[in-house]
Image (cartoon, rainbow, N blue to C red; front, side, top):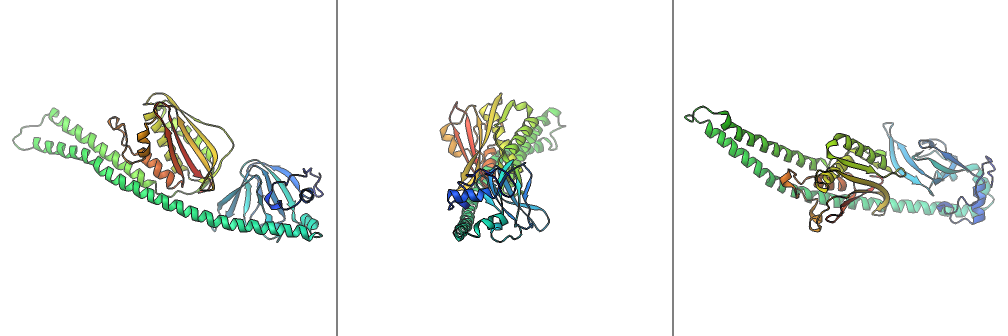
Amino acid sequence: MTSAATGTTTPGGILDGIVLFEAFSPEERAAVASRGRVFDAAAGTVLMREGDIASSLYVLLDGTVRVVRNDQFGGQVEVGFRRAGDCFGEMALIDGGARSASVIAATPVTVFELERELFLALISPSPDLLAKLLRELSRMIREVSERVVREDLERRTRIAESALARQRAITQAVTGLAHELNTPLGVCVTAASHLQELARPGNGPLATEELREPAALLDANLARAVDLVEAFSAIAACQNAEPLEALDLRQTVADIAALFAVQYPDLQLSLRVMPGAPCPWIGCTQPLERVLNHLFANAAAHGYAGGPGAVEVTVEPATLDAVPAWTLTVRDRGAGIPAEHLPILTDPFFTTARGRGHKGLGLAVVFNTVTGPLGGRIAFDSAPGAGTTVTITLPQEL
């Protein structure tokens, strides 16, 4: 079929399955398709610009686009994504007013464009077609309104649940910190008391050997106390909000993994991020980096006990409370975790390697970050000798 406007070949069934034209008969959809054109656009192409006079409806046949609006400071704010099968600019068919947002191709896209004047020329002689279009537009507006309300309620519920979980974790952390600090501070007090005793008048000149042991105890235990306080501060830092960015989640994860490998070459850990299509994500790089760094370090220290090993990361589409999401899976093939430890893995100060200097705060930081600023969920699956799989589900838009 050929477009009357452009001469571009347009398959007659190209609008089949598109919600806006669902009530149209196959013949009517074919008639509408014949008035439009199909074109391809590269990632980064501006398909629709905010403020321009609306003249066309677009149907996204393949790929993903970003919807952005200008803020009061002249910057752009992400307001959503559209994917294959979605329409944008549909209100242009009715009012021909100014565009309320810009639409930019996030990936290479294939788009069907229908000019308003050509469409009106088609439906003007047919009140039945016009009635069908108005019914579909009204239904879409109603569904969008209901979805906005539902998503807002779900978001508020997630925030409340996350806040409660963080409060519990912080309470446990405060108790654990007091307990953990008690030992190094007690040793420091004892060592300082011993130094005072050695320095009392009448004890003679102090020998270097006499000072070495209490001084070493003071140094080691004060360093231990400082490490505990810094780790505890990291838990509190999980509550800080970061600026949102429009990112490709898969590429962001790959960048974090590459940076980790450069920063910790002695860990002998091979990190592989599985390839795939771009994963548009409106989120924060810093908290995601904090989570992955802890998980990678945990796999190296506990899964492979400091020896050589490998970690595989995958990113796949998912849903979170009926909202589009990404599932980030971090999998190792190491020693695994006993079943009785799985429910308490993220408890502050839980560790099976305290004798090797581990404080047991890494996974508490991971849990608080995922459920806090990243607004997601985390789950652990493991068995002794079978490795460990950490599944993180993040909303596509924070």
